[in-house]
Amino acid sequence: MTDTQIYTATDRYNRTVDQLEAIARDFDPERPDDLRTQIIEALGGLDIWPMSALAGQDDG
Image (cartoon, one colour):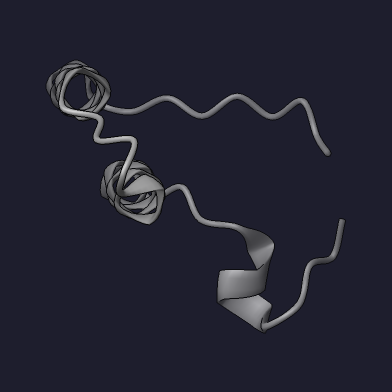
Protein backbone atom coordinates (compact mmCIF):
# COMPACT_ATOMS: atom_id res chain seq x y z
CA MET A 1 0.00 0.00 0.00
CA THR A 2 1.25 3.48 -0.79
CA ASP A 3 0.80 6.76 1.01
CA THR A 4 -0.29 8.53 -2.18
CA GLN A 5 -2.94 11.16 -1.62
CA ILE A 6 -5.50 11.81 -4.32
CA TYR A 7 -7.34 15.11 -4.62
CA THR A 8 -10.59 15.63 -6.47
CA ALA A 9 -12.91 18.56 -7.10
CA THR A 10 -14.64 19.71 -3.91
CA ASP A 11 -18.14 19.39 -5.42
CA ARG A 12 -17.41 15.85 -6.55
CA TYR A 13 -15.99 14.97 -3.13
CA ASN A 14 -19.01 16.45 -1.32
CA ARG A 15 -21.46 14.60 -3.60
CA THR A 16 -19.70 11.34 -2.80
CA VAL A 17 -19.76 12.03 0.95
CA ASP A 18 -23.48 12.80 0.66
CA GLN A 19 -23.98 9.57 -1.28
CA LEU A 20 -22.10 7.53 1.35
CA GLU A 21 -24.12 9.19 4.11
CA ALA A 22 -27.37 8.27 2.34
CA ILE A 23 -26.14 4.69 1.90
CA ALA A 24 -25.41 4.45 5.64
CA ARG A 25 -28.80 5.93 6.59
CA ASP A 26 -30.68 3.55 4.29
CA PHE A 27 -28.71 0.43 5.24
CA ASP A 28 -30.87 -2.71 5.15
CA PRO A 29 -29.27 -5.53 7.20
CA GLU A 30 -31.23 -8.01 5.10
CA ARG A 31 -29.29 -6.89 1.99
CA PRO A 32 -25.58 -6.62 2.92
CA ASP A 33 -24.49 -7.27 -0.69
CA ASP A 34 -26.48 -4.22 -1.79
CA LEU A 35 -24.54 -2.10 0.73
CA ARG A 36 -21.21 -3.26 -0.70
CA THR A 37 -22.37 -2.57 -4.26
CA GLN A 38 -23.49 0.95 -3.38
CA ILE A 39 -20.19 1.72 -1.66
CA ILE A 40 -18.22 0.40 -4.66
CA GLU A 41 -20.33 2.58 -6.97
CA ALA A 42 -19.69 5.65 -4.79
CA LEU A 43 -15.93 5.02 -4.82
CA GLY A 44 -16.07 4.45 -8.58
CA GLY A 45 -17.60 7.90 -8.90
CA LEU A 46 -14.28 9.21 -7.57
CA ASP A 47 -12.36 6.90 -9.92
CA ILE A 48 -11.13 4.80 -7.00
CA TRP A 49 -10.71 1.19 -8.11
CA PRO A 50 -8.66 -1.78 -6.92
CA MET A 51 -5.58 -2.68 -8.95
CA SER A 52 -7.30 -5.95 -9.89
CA ALA A 53 -9.88 -3.98 -11.89
CA LEU A 54 -7.09 -2.58 -14.08
CA ALA A 55 -4.79 -5.53 -14.62
CA GLY A 56 -6.83 -8.49 -13.49
CA GLN A 57 -4.51 -9.02 -10.56
CA ASP A 58 -3.28 -7.01 -7.60
CA ASP A 59 0.28 -5.72 -7.71
CA GLY A 60 0.26 -4.97 -3.96
